[in-house]
Length: 287
Ligand SMILES: NC(=O)C1=CN([C@@H]2O[C@H](COP(=O)(O)OP(=O)(O)OC[C@H]3O[C@@H](n4cnc5c(N)ncnc54)[C@H](OP(=O)(O)O)[C@@H]3O)[C@@H](O)[C@H]2O)C=CC1
Ligand SMILES: O=C(O)[C@@H]1CCC=N1
Image (cartoon, rainbow, N blue to C red; front, top):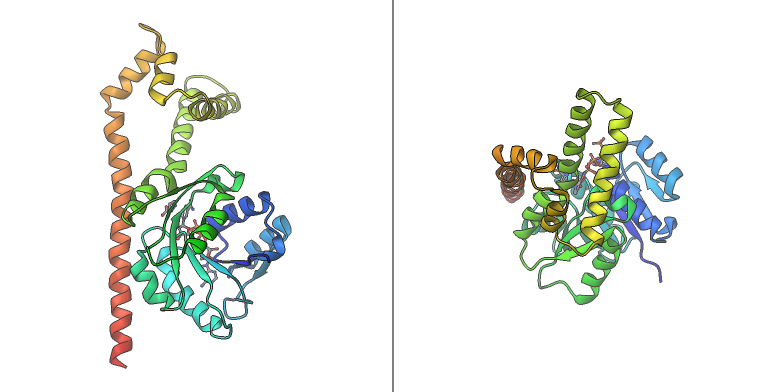
């Protein structure tokens, strides 16, 4: 029997995951995308043959899995609306959260007792099947449900399961946000090469192909990145000069600081959302 998946939110990350699912052969008719923006719904329906709905209240929630894919700040409201709509259906779907910074304990207060949740952190290269996803499931989740989440996220690329939820914040800082770091590096290199005299289009082609080549070598050659770096670096040559410049600017500390800032932001978000969940709980108790 087929597994029906709904996406609560059809933005950048959901679109990437839908593309990965479709590329892996998941039937478009088994995928529902619920997004309030009709243009996004139309684009996903046209491109991937998925079913769409622009209203949470009116969507057909008879699904096996719900991917929680709206921004953290609007998740509580979207889940509340979905809960009301789900009231009509008899079985509770498995929820898979892709949101940064919302702990399972907070999601549980919003989802209710009957909906189990697995926390994941994918990234946008999922759209090409070369994504990287971190996953955490609490011990109470059955092996079958873990396998289901594993199967779904594996359509996006590689899966890495972690034993403690706190590691998801590190994964957000590493692979969740990571593509943006590489894109920023590419932008800086394109700008620099252009400033140094290359035509922008030539600079772009050279930078992007270099990034692709370096990534493929790092993945496929069997050598670790340090060895590959050494093989480019001739003694007394040009690469050594560039790397010395990076060292003087303390590139490693800059990268570590940026990643820590991303992880810290996830913790702050978690704290804010936990306080919001507690306030809602107290308000409901007061009624
Ligand atoms: N982008 C990324 O690289 C990654 C993102 N994530 C996580 O994925 C989640 C989504 O991020 P991203 O895809 O970038 O965000 P987007 O803003 O691109 O997508 C969210 C979509 O949900 C829609 N939406 C919001 N509220 C509702 C609602 N009540 N009913 C229907 N639709 C609604 C939004 O519409 P509108 O635009 O009108 O608000 C938007 O189209 C976040 O929680 C993020 O932490 C995780 C890993 C990587
Ligand atoms: O920037 C964000 O918050 C999301 C989570 C990881 C990538 N994008």
